[in-house]
Structure formats: structure tokens, C-alpha cells
Image 1 (spheres, rainbow, N blue to C red):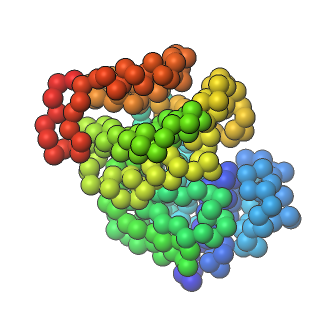
Image 2: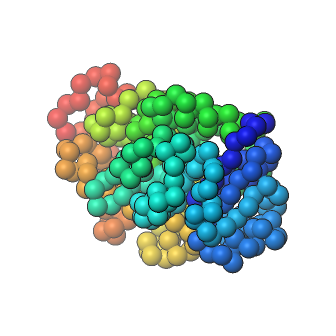
Length: 342
């Protein structure tokens, strides 16, 4: 146990609740900030978050609250687990109460639309006096709450942040690896959501294992190509935040983005697919933002372009796949051979 450390989690969705529960299970006091006071009361009295983790008993050391000032008071570490579209607004509300000594870590995998900002960039802009980091990896909330063996990556330019998060979160079923490539780790967690949609769609259409393996490896190539263009280290994508997260989200029906893709493959509209999910699938918006950014930068991303046609332009999957298979063949592994003009 890490003595004398207190933690706050902002966001009572599935992953925010799971982080709070993991911290509480370690014997550390943890406050869970939730917008809805009724849901906070449910956590405190019933030890349950019935909306996101039904049937799962939560740690007695979680104290849920809808009072942001109270939630942040005296915490050493603050995790922000808020959907990307609300991330900046909540951070701006929180900074009134935050002290420079508090470590702030984003667990959100998404992009802010208007200026293509990742959550770490928002934190750096809004909280210039705080030490910041990001958490990402193959971390399905429903498996973590079941205490299945899981690993994640904490990334920060500050070694003290990495060590503090490792100490606070590491336990018998949850291992925390460290990285200094905050941008690469965050991009890996963000970009893989796009390809999880493609994977779910391919599964619904009954595509074979050869197709799935091709899809996953070419997804990794696209992710790293795009991220390196934005300044990330390509080696980051060989780790948990890259290939690790890509595998789990492209393979598991527990992934929200996979389920959106599967619904699309069954013939549902995008609106029906998102509505049936009942919670945010970051990949839908990420697909739109990355397509626009790739076009602006001139980054070759055929899977993104094809999926964009299917999701937003109602293009037939078979025609898009045929076009992609007839496109110029290039090198297998990124960065080993020069890319021919496409």
C-alpha cells in the first residue's frame, strides 16, 4: 500500500469508476466526482454504478460526490476520465480548485475537434503549473473490475509523475509500465478507436482470419505513420499503447468502438449504431478529425479514407474494399523502405 496518498477521479463513467475502484481496493482513499448527485448517492449507499458497471460491488473507500471543490481538496493525484468533447470544460472548472502540487493525469482517448488537440495538450494549456501525464493501454473496464490481469502505460516527461502513478495503481492484477513519449502513447490510444470500428464491421460481414490479420497490421502501419508525422516516436507503437491496445479493441465485443462497427456491418445506420450503444464511442468523431488532418498533412491513410466513406458517406463496403485492394502496393513495415508516391 502507498501510505499517505489520496486520489481523485473526475468522471463517473465506466473507466473512471474502475480507476476509483482499483485505487480503493488498494486501501487508498479515493473521491469520485460525478455530475449527477443521484448517481453519486447510489455509489455511496449501494456501492454500485448501475449505469456503467451493473452488478459490480465497488470499494468501500470510494467517496462519490458532485461537489467539484470538495472532490479536489487535498488530493495528491487527479485522474480526468471525461469524454473528449467535455474534457476542456471540466478541466477549466477544476483548475479553480487545483494546486500546483497536484499531479493531473488524463485517461481519455480522444481528440478535441476545433484544433485537433489531444487531452495532454489541453492539460498543458489549462494547467501550466501542474505536473501532467496520460494513461493508456489495452484496458477494457469490464475486465479490470473483474480483476483480470491487465497492464497499462503511464506517459509523462516528468519521472516523478510516472513513479507516482506506478506506485498508486500497481497491484496483483494491474501492472503499470512507464513511457516518456506522452504524445505517442496518447495517439496510440486515440487512433486505435478508428480501426476497432473497421474490425467490428469486418466481423459482422463474416470476413475471414486472413482479412482480420491484414486489417490489424495495416492499421498499425497507418497509426504509426500518422503519429510520427505529428512528432511521436514510432517505437511507442510496438508497446501496450500501440499494438496492445489495437489488438484488444479490434478483437473484443467489449470494445464500444468494435460494437459500433459491428452494428454498421449488420446494416444499421450510424445513428442507430451509436444509439444502441448507449454510451460514447470516441472512434466515430476521431475518424472524422483524423481524416481531415491526414488530408491536410498529406498522410497516406487508405483505411481511414475507406472507413470514412462507409461510415459517413454510406458507401458499400464491398466497393470500398475492392478499391483499396487495387491501390498501389507499398512496403510492409513502416520506416524500413522509402514510401513510393501513392
